[in-house]
Image (cartoon, rainbow, N blue to C red):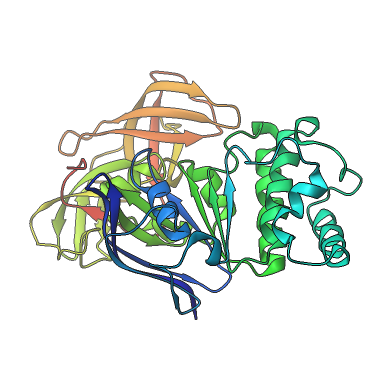
Length: 362
């Protein structure tokens, strides 16, 4: 059962469409992240759902109710902003109960007690926003939004002003609260790390469109474009030639396990292709034999270390394949140290076979 359904949505500013023919659904109690670079339309979509920005075409339905002409205050949608948007002259208690004016004092106090316990702010009810840390202020904003029992919660870059040392702890806490309260949410960020931790599904956006929608693991392992592959992490494109039922490469003959390229077009025999490999999928070992392996050895490839960078928990390497028929420079990460100039042997274990017909995004 879908909580939110958006169909063929078009909207923008000053006659210029930012979102065009956009559609997606939010399932009950799911947390969906709108992920993408600045200017791709994430916040515009959030404003359209909230009712801040009018739409020019399409429909928005929340719990089967058409929202296109429903005023913002009647949509039963909670809003959380990156700057918290707390009232500086009101206490924590007054901020949380601000939207409960139609309820009795006794009801307000009961909801206040429930909310402060939920977000762990007991004892801070009489403090003002400037007396709280960034994380505490965001908890007040969450409590204020949930106090009105929204059907949907919208969060616009809610963690960008939080210190990095406590950010992910707060993300995990707020996710747990939303799941406990059975509140579906749409979350905007440009950080893939925040999206991976917070969301059930990702809607990766580019130029006003959702280019791929699904859970994080699927998008990471099975991207449908260069853009998705490269936005979600470091990539390598291993040169190959399709010789069905195999791929010919610097790693020898690799069984071909897919019938189509990443974008869905059918694979053609005797064509060049590029196999997607993430840095962590490639295993690097020292050449203990002190002799270069042949180009024909199946499953392995000889390479030379060209660059090494220490990144705390691991090293990131740039290595050059020795294969002259299928040359390439690959990025690899490993906890083992190899000096620049070292001869190494590579192998790989990719959970999904993703092929592109070209090396770089258009």
